[in-house]
Length: 223
Image (cartoon, rainbow, N blue to C red; front, side, top):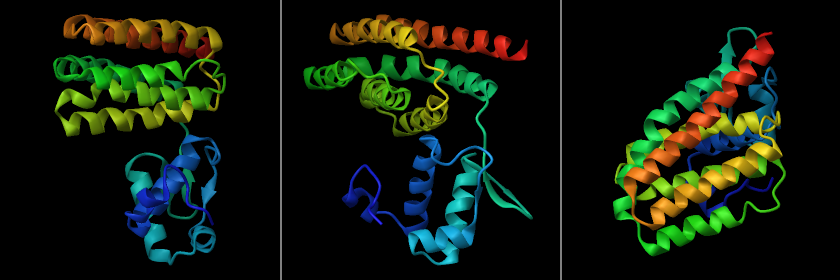
């Protein structure tokens, strides 16, 4: 079978369990493997041309990152991501991302700002929630790249997996995306001006609006 995105050279550098982990994780994120769907070791081994050992290791990695739950009798089952899970993610983002951008802005070059601008420009005309969420992830991470803390970047990056998993249920709306785009423009403007405090404050307000929107959705589903 053809290797998944992003590139064949990327996938060739991975071990077999890492390769399968990322391939299955990407399918889960895109909604191709639905919550509650069973992942059979024998089926995966045949489909990907692997022995049972790397398949078991990949499934354990997915369980550690809460993409699947492994049951004694049913095997691995894709986990659901609830709106309450999403609210937890947003709460953690609210703590980490303003910190990261505040650390990154003093180290940003004009090329860094131009790169983030190019990502933001590619939002125009995007209606697909998964594509929009993918671009959103790239834009946010581009703003934090110069923070100087690989561990902080890794923590933030992992949070976006949960956000991408929500995209296929179409929580993001065109109106919400337009509002987010305006907020992104203001955050980027602060970065361009080298104002770390303003960038951090604007980002905090941006994520906090997402948190309030999720709370409203939670109340709607609970009523």
